[in-house]
Amino acid sequence: MKQTNTHPLIVDYLDQVCRHVRATEMHRRIRDELESHLLDLMDEQMDEGVEEEEAVKQAILQMGDSAAVGKQLHRIYKPKVEWRLLVYVVAFLAVGLFTMYGMQVSFIEFKLDSYWFYALFGIGVMLAVTFTDYRKLLRYSLHLYMLTVGVFFLILAYGYTMNGKTYMYLGGSIRIDFVAMSMYLFLISVAGMLLTRTWRFRSTASKLTVFVLLPACLFVMAGSIMELMLYLFGFMILMMYTKTVRKEKLYLVIVSAIVWTAACLLDRYTLGRVQGWVQPTQDPLGKGYEYLEAMEAIRSAGFWGRGSNAPLPRMPYLDSDFKFTYLIHSYGWIAGILILLAIVLFIIRLARVVKEVDEPYGKHLIVSIVPLFSLFFVWPLLMSTGMLPIVNIEIPFLSYGNIGTALAHFAVLGLVLSVHRHRSSIGKPHTYMAK
Image 1 (tube, rainbow, N blue to C red):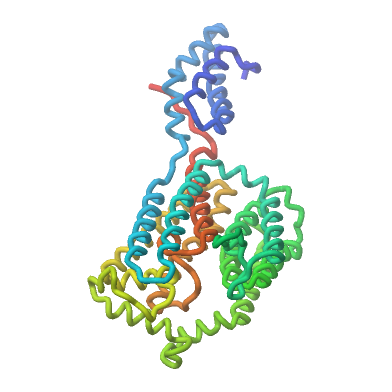
Image 2: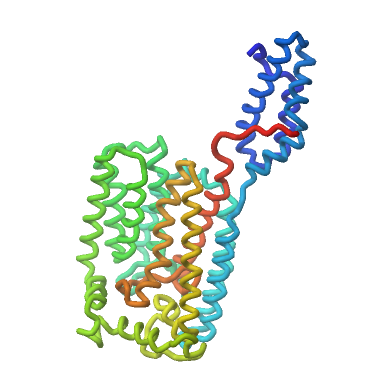
């Protein structure tokens, strides 16, 4: 190219174009590409004997009106929110609140107040995360990991223990299940630490310690074996996706699987649930009780159910773990089919979001958290119908649960939406010439 310094007319033209593109992170790339095209057009004019000043004007004229080009580029790179996922969330919350009013469970008024609080506050958290740039998290991945570990130790030292599980106690009746939230925090930090160059623990042994052994010890000390198994599930999926040395990847996945199996075998509560699931009729008043009651509640519901006030006095956790069972018992198999269909469509939409994202950090994030997030929907449905063992997992948005866990689900979905929202702002921009 004959032109080495940017001509003032070109600079002014690029300024005019970028004024119409709100995705400011793309301005540099847009300017570079448009300038390259303009200089090529100038070269063609000057090769034909046209003076430099006139060549600049002709190149700009060929490129097209700055406002038209800018608006076309804005349409391409405008961050777009996946509103359909938000519609599903609102629908799940509406169904959850509606069914809560018909329940005959203890502390229902308190639970309704909590449900309304985390629904409204959670939507605010989700939207706040959605409209932030997730890429800013990358540089703080190691800091997030250290903060999570630090808070974990504080909770172990000063937390509130109930039924063998440690919570963050904020006074009054407010307790936050930070241990459950830490599953996502660890996965988000690990997804960034695998990519960032500030990560200095490069040996397989150090990665095994930081990614697997230390979190495992913390979860075990907090009495949260289920959260450990869920975290390792997400971590193994992330490791199978990430691009690293195959031998190292295989080693980390195998050790994670061994830790997962050991945690399952050492947890008597989980083992008892599995034994009751395999042969529920052998101990109908003990390990198999909940399975038999749930299946009977579903079997006797019929197509239209028993009504919104139909009691299930012998069935525990109707507002949380067995919310799907209660929905079918009260509103029939048709309600169960509709809920199942909505959840399937919701997960399919999440899978499409994963497929549409190409940016490495965004891909690492959603590959690590979306399978775990989806598991919270799938497992309660299948365990309610006796197809999987019973565990303490509530359907996000639809079931009543701990405020901390509920807000974590909102924040995670907001992060997924943020990744999807910025998918068009990453990569090589296209040049449009106005006609």
